[in-house]
Length: 454
Image 1 (cartoon, rainbow, N blue to C red):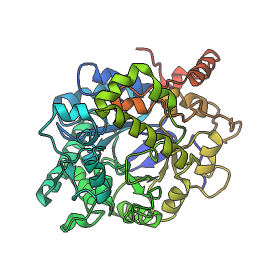
Image 2 (cartoon, one colour):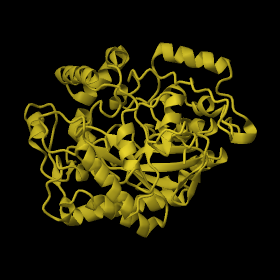
Image 3 (cartoon, rainbow, N blue to C red):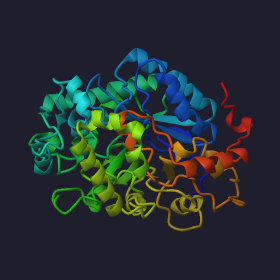
């Protein structure tokens, strides 16, 4: 059976009104005054434009440590999380659904790479699954990164899983429709999943065991809320990394987690390092040369030579990581052939025609049950209106040439290392968005989606 973008989708016991979703992004909202309003301003436009499912970006399950970037929101506090009901109410008012992505950065955290954060938190060590691999220890010796890891005991791993469960309970109480686990892109869950990081000799040396325990804790504390997880395959890993997850390993892990009880999976091809395998696209020259950001880069990276080193690596990766969109399609297709839960596909999806092909709307074998985008929503917060506007029950009269205005230039991503919000900074993209706004491309029928003005 084929699917089209306008069809509903069941994830667990939640019905999503269509198959277009806003993938997790950094909102940089934090937890201070105005955090909830910032999240609403970032996420509500997608729902107002008709997007069926909105994923709030990575939120941290503990009160300290674990943030991969400045300004990440934490969901450890009952009082703060209860205030997020204003956000979930805003999404629901437009008929959309919202899941929150739970995260802990582990060795990817700011305790590793952010110089100013380390100065302000001298007693804070990274949580590690095992002793860092030699490649990372070498970067530590030359001063590129700073490792002082604490390898978790078995009891500490179990306590961390319980924190995921408690965070899920708070979020469900605040009205979230489901939970999304950051199981890829070098977060701590990913670190448990891969032989590059996980060399434990207890039961958590099994690369799926932590995923299973986290799901158990969520079920015990938050009930039968739908739970989605990213699943990594480390196909972009360089040759010097011999122990990593192959595509076949990723497919097997996805099948295992679906069989264990996860309600949907998001297959993602990503490196063992935190690099451009997550975003791909062009080298963000504009972001690196922006004079207004240079002082913030020095605070984040600690010295001019480290800024230059990160910038050089960024340029090298942009050449190595082909955009080749949608780059997770084959991984998703292989997983979908093996599991009985929805498969969500993201990673370079940019055209309506690509979305239809991924969903099998032209009687081609489908690769996925829903398609998502991330960076394009920085460029067009109400993007759904353009992609869903012409959908009809018979799937006729669809603008298959509709394409996002995002150029995948990555000028939105690099400044986030300094705590800058994720916004489009590219003049040509902003000019095109302005033209579309004047033409009414983002207008929606209030009877369908509700007004966005508050």
